Amino acid sequence: FATYGFVGDTERNRWGRGRRTGFERELRRHALDVSVFTPTPSALRLIDRERFCGWLKSKRTPLAIFAANDRIAVQCVSCCRSLGIDIPKDVAILGVDNNEMICENVSVPLSSISLDFESISYHGARLLANVLDGLCPGTTTQLIAPTGVKVRRSTDILTAEDSNMAKALELIRTNFKHPYGATQLSESLGFSRAKVDRLFANALGRSIGEEI
Image 1 (tube, helix red, strand yellow):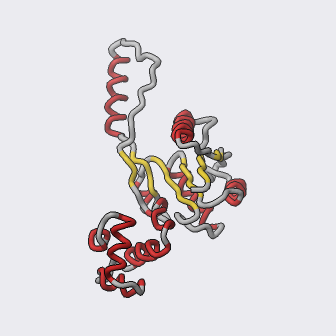
Image 2 (cartoon, rainbow, N blue to C red; image 1 turned 120 degrees about the vertical axis):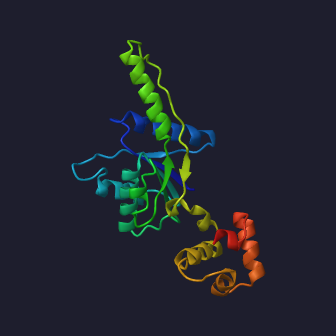
Image 3 (spheres, rainbow, N blue to C red; image 1 turned 180 degrees about the vertical axis):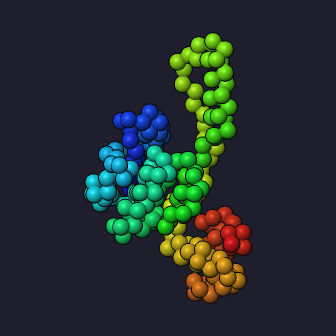
């Protein structure tokens, strides 16, 4: 990526600040910088579209955006689409919470970090029980690691590295409801089956059939 961005309310939300800090720290480990966009929420929107669109247009692409949660990420997607920005080729977007009702029902399905809600609930209940028993809860913040990233199309940036690979994966996606195998894919690309096999092996480390 040419640029990295964080979008979220880091002034009023402690969790937003924590996610921004962690993102910045990890990027610094790789000698990379992050540009931060702090929304000014209104009653109707989580981000002010005009200002955010201006911020988007000022960034070099390809741009990677880490949004503080899925709802903000969805509005990032909407702004990109309104500007004709290709997701994920020009801008890749990652949210947090992995709310499937949100992530699966966007014009570009949203990749998102899955939180460990079971562990969060358990530790919260244990803390409450201790307080009810008269124990001091203490001041130490306990951080619970996420369970992983659910990858969807909004961060499928592997495709941007190779136009042939991009086209192949797009053909697989658009024809998934029809009988469509390695032979049909090779014909659509205009390549020999052997060349397409090598393309998938080199780029993905798996066969065409495994990807389909």
